[in-house]
Image 1: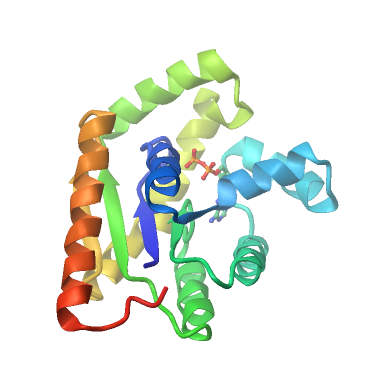
Image 2: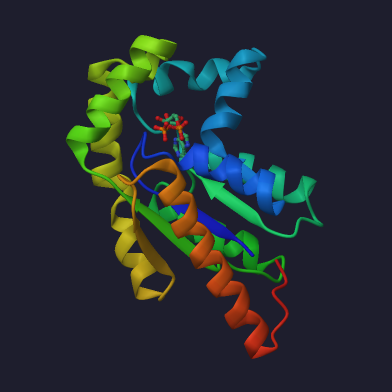
Length: 201
Ligand code: ADP
């Protein structure tokens, strides 16, 4: 099963994705983690994206799509992928559909963590104090929220139109959010089984 965890920056997608990896054997594909890894190891790509990331803007579609494609190729036998922080634009979502389709698969569900903006600002202010991530500084964070509103939020209607969108309360406790996600995944597994269709990837 291929799942997209969707929501604004600092909504808790990464935390939930890591839980699903540990508990259900998903392969997590986080473009944010991949880009940070490229920076840490000092690759050409890492150098190219550093300034863009720190400013809070999105890096180019071309770069993140290539990163995802590389990971899909590296994990041909994965039971399922969990996309975290990708897709973030309409062209990215179209590219994802094409990449999965060419592998005989598709996006099965999109889980949207709904959170309020002021709570995000509070969360990120704390994270900035604790971890010092450059793109958590107030100005960059404002830009990340704007990027979400302008470039990413339009995907909500796209996935709703495809009947794939499931919305949960991202302001609930971490445990409650995990339980809500688990409920959606279990219901999906049941439906797939009932249909007798193979849940291939
Ligand atoms: P967040 O904690 O804001 O969800 P991420 O760790 O997912 O952030 O991403 C950090 C930064 O990496 C983004 O602000 C952006 O510059 C870049 N980035 C990550 N994923 C993408 C993507 N799918 N498209 C464009 N840029 C991305």
